Length: 280
Image (cartoon, rainbow, N blue to C red; front, side):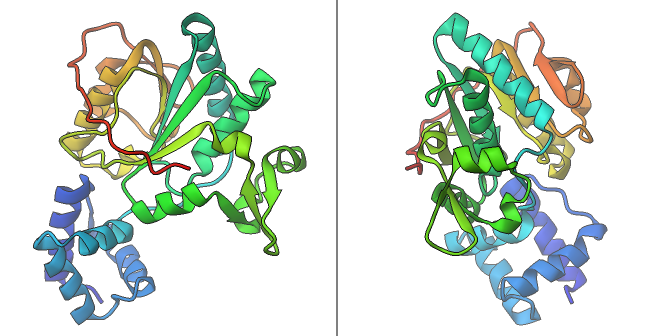
């Protein structure tokens, strides 16, 4: 059982480390995750919180893993993926190459689905596009970079896509993402609550799905403002259809089903600091 004091400490750390706003409804969820991470007893959680408060890197990484939601899947909201790929390929026709960003990539299903969609719509294994996939959780990114999944994760893939985009691993009921798909995706660690982002624009499409709902309002506004600044003038932002932009809506024009286009108004310019890729 997480005590009130422990929960208050966790809330402060969640906000300062990741911009995440926790409420009372998250307490039970955190208790379950703590047990799975082996810090379910009071002493273990106190030790983790103290180490994170003191700035210990491993403790902060473990706490981020506890705080963040990893639920994802292949081809979630497939129409959004089609719109993203169609827009990117049109942009590539005009500019030679398109750039897409999957912010909150978790274990990789979203950016790999986007890469598959680009290959399908372009009808070539090397579409003129690249995908930057970022996440705050280094452990999740390690899974994404490995690109191997079991049947539970692959259940949403149609037989034709399994044949075209998966390879056998030699391990029963596990498959790996085909090289043509992997080549389109670069993985990079990024905390949206950080003062500096290791990314530079412009991007033709940015997907930030199932992320905004966890951020405190001020952080949500700052993230969306910075994303607007990194989008091309005709760029698209995609969020989960159940999410909203809040007070940052003036940077975008709403489309359908969580698709927004950047408005042609001046945005503050943010310059990111390039960081080493952790991709293949």
